[in-house]
Length: 387
Image 1: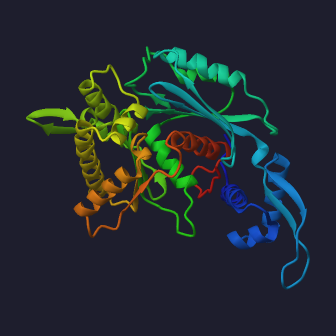
Image 2: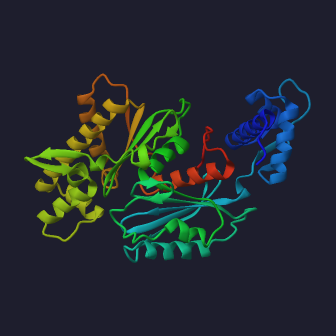
């Protein structure tokens, strides 16, 4: 293996800077890129030529001259149709997927009802989706796959799953046998955090460098961004706060046994003498102002505010983003969580926000960003994706 020289490393770093600038800029020119990243125009032109040969640049023609006159620039932009990526989200009941261009724009997405709880059944559904993919007017077609799972991931393998029967079956190996592209597995709360970092529209604000994504679904998980990078912890177990223990009525419970969305709906379903409760049925009972349901929801809101407060005391992020399918239907409940949090931390500077994307899109968009970054070799660069 040939050792890279300092010049080779510098060239690679400069190429990443140029590509990052192109990715974020929209229409631009070689001279504009050179000014933005403080490189010589000859260096930028050489790199742009190389990227153009690879198919990553689209020529747009001659632009307008500047207000000072001079030569009119040749406009270029990142070729987001170079290829596309595929993101899956393996939920408790559904397999969702999204096909996106490299810049994040959606080509198609769909939600499929799971036909079984075994991971082999999920693989067969994925296989059908992959086999049905087209070129979608791109140069290279499928470039990578990301898989979101409601479980910890370590070394690209699912450690365990509360919803799916894994049976020592390697989903990664099975997928690698049918496609020859990079494949990345990641926890859904982590991907939600990535989606907020990469797709959040800041309206002129500086991008957040430290944030938490608190996901309250069938379990409770947290995705953590520190200094703009995802924090994994040992063996990818960071953020499994639903497994934290809590004492209530002299009994020890895991946090998600009491306050996950699943736990709340199971408690209400038992009171209603139903085997289970859907999110829509839960929402209907809240609208009906059922006394028992409102008492349960009051306790839930207080618990979420306290969980959020405890997380902030530990990591002091700039913002915490909450995500819950049922709570998202009731802005007043979200406001109450924020109010209870503010009462606990009246002088705190951490913002409490709510996930800006559709609840079901967050982990998919995070997967799109994760695998697109890998395909482009821009894992640690500041990128701005589009929905």
